[in-house]
Image (cartoon, rainbow, N blue to C red; front, side):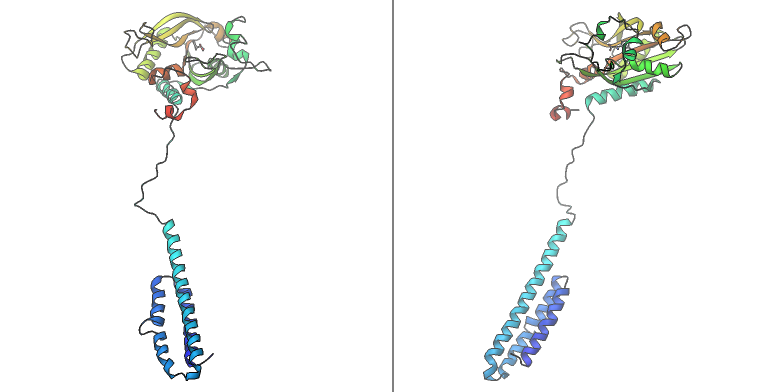
Length: 341
Ligand code: DAH
C-alpha cells in the first residue's frame, strides 16, 4: 500500500528511528515521542488527513498507518530500555557515599614476636647489635665449641634432634656466640634472637620448638657487675621500674662462673603467689662470664679479653607479661586468642 500519507509517515518513522538510535538520554527520546505522537505531532496530523483518502483505499491505508505507528512505539520503548540499562550499569559502578564503610580486618604481630621485638629494642638501646644464625647447626657450634662435655645429657638423642648427616636443630641460641666470635675479633656486643628446638613432650610449659634471645659482650675488663647492670636495666624496661633482680650460682658449660638470674615476681611484687611458687622470684635467664675455654675455642686470647653471656626464653617472658598460663596457646594460632593482643 502506498499513498502520500503512508509515504510521509514511513519517512518520518525512518528519521525517528535514526534519532532514537543516537539518543543518549530520555529527554531526547521524549522529544521524538512528542514530535510524532504528541497532540500537535505528526501522527495525529496525518490521521486527520485520512478523511481525504478515497473510500476504496481506506482500509489498506489504515492498516499500513497502524503498522507504522506500532513500529514507532516499539522503537521508542526499545530506546528507553537502552537508556535505562545504561543508567543502571553506570549507577552500579558509582561511588555511593551513603553506604556503610567496609571494615578490613588488620593483622597484628603475634605476641611472641611482639615480645621478641621489644627485647631486641631494649638491648639495641643499650648498645647491642643483632646477630643471626641458622636453625640447623653443627655439633661443633651447638656443643663442642661451647665447652659442653662429650657425656653431657643435653647431647643425648632423646633431648636433641639430629639429622642423618650429624648436624642438629640448635637446642639454644648460644651457637650464635661461636659464629660471631669466629667471624670477628673483640670487642663484641650482640644479641641473637631466634628459634630453638628440643625433644620435649609438649605440655603447659614445654614445647619442642621455642624461642630464646642470647646476649654476648666481650671486651677488655668486662665484669659480672656489668652483666647485672644490663639485666637490671632490661628487667625495668620489660616489666617496670619496681622489678628487682638477683643472681644465684649455677652451672653452664660455657660460662664460669655461671648464674641463674631471677626477677622479683611481677604477679605478686615478690610477696609470694602461685606463679612464683611462693618464692617471690621468677627464673628468667641463664648467664655468666664466658668460660676461657670458649674464648680459646674461637681463637680469642683469654688473657686479653673477657666477657659475659646470657640467654633467656621468649615464651617465658611473653607468658608472664600477658598472663598466659599454657605455652600451647602461643602456637595454636586460634584467632580468638590472638585477637586479644
Ligand atoms: N643456652 C642456655 C640454655 O638454653 C641459656 C644460657 C645460659 C645462655 C647461660 C647463656 C649463658 O649465654 O651464659 O639453657
